Length: 303
Image 1 (cartoon, one colour):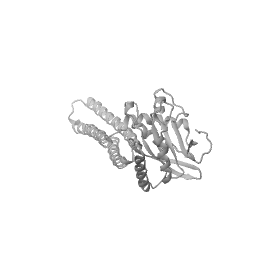
Image 2: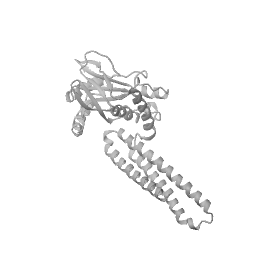
Image 3: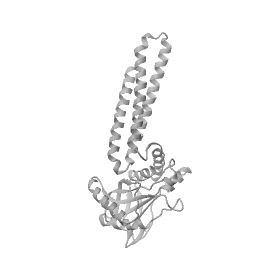
Image 4: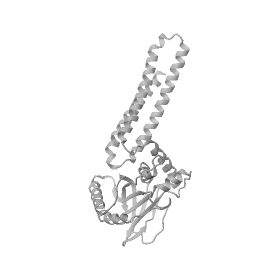
């Protein structure tokens, strides 16, 4: 997908991961389950590298869903913060910034605000030869709601200031756009259902502990049944009950493993300030996965 313009100074190339993370981090605070008036706009950084006039975006870092550029002091404070945390970013360089937008008059619009231009002018003093991306998440949600999945609809526009004039910057993705849009739609649905917008640690641990309790209860029921098997007066009924219990536990294990995979993946879409919590929760999910594997191994050996 390419936007033509004249006077470009830069050109962007995105990978699949970066585009998914922009869409995913935005979805967390603006989706079907949240009232439209409560939607939040997500601000973050584009991460990657440069080769001449081409900027490669390999990852993104969501920073905040409450950042308001009300005045130049807010802007200066945010850029000071970005400059400070840039030293902790080891793998990639900061190559731009992004903002999700829902405030256009129509679903196809992306509203460029005066503060965007002021912010970018100051941003470029610290991070020269960079652009900014505005993501029309409202357009994505509306097309998904209507069952439209088109590679021509990704909701991105990238801009730069050239000689104090706003220009739209060319960009492309190194992944098949039709497949990418399908991935984006699936991600929007998964994040809406599985990734909490607040109290993420508390809510994740509640689910993890509930799964542990269900596993322990069903597994213990089977162990108790095996111990009492010799006392049963109806061997056929005993066998049917045991088979049913084992089948139920196997289905539970499969369901939990699928949920673990999904929830671990979605933790990659949290904001920078939640990175430590995200790693803790991934550890808890991995431990739950080990517990499931041990129970599955016991069942297979028993059978």
